[in-house]
Amino acid sequence: MKASKWMQFLKTNDEEELAMLAQKSTELHKAVGVLMELSADQQTRLLFEAREKAWRDQVDRIEGALEQGLAQGLEQGLAQGLEQGLEQGLEQGLERGRNEQAIAIAKKMLRRNVPIDEIVEDTGLSIAAIEALMSSD
Image (cartoon, rainbow, N blue to C red; front, top):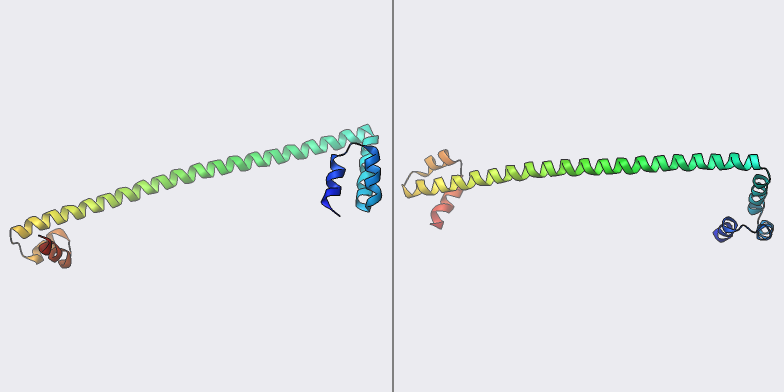
């Protein structure tokens, strides 16, 4: 059955239109019957409305908990990511600083004609790095 018929059923408050829709489909006929039955008995209608309200309240609680969980997860993820990023950036900065210091020391040692094997031992730089420094001066 087409969704447009159901939309029309859900939107209308006109009994004639409901009767016309009921003639077009057995599903709509059943739905109109249930609607008429619920509408006729006030106690049944109130019970139905109470159940609907309880269902909507449950959905609202679930959606609220989901939103809260997502917000907390995002907050924790951002905090953890920021902390890891800072740690990684600090470590990279320290490593770069150590490397620049080793290069500066190696340059001074080269100017004093210290043998390459001693420069390697004292700075931790590779022979290739030291040779590159020698050719750049």
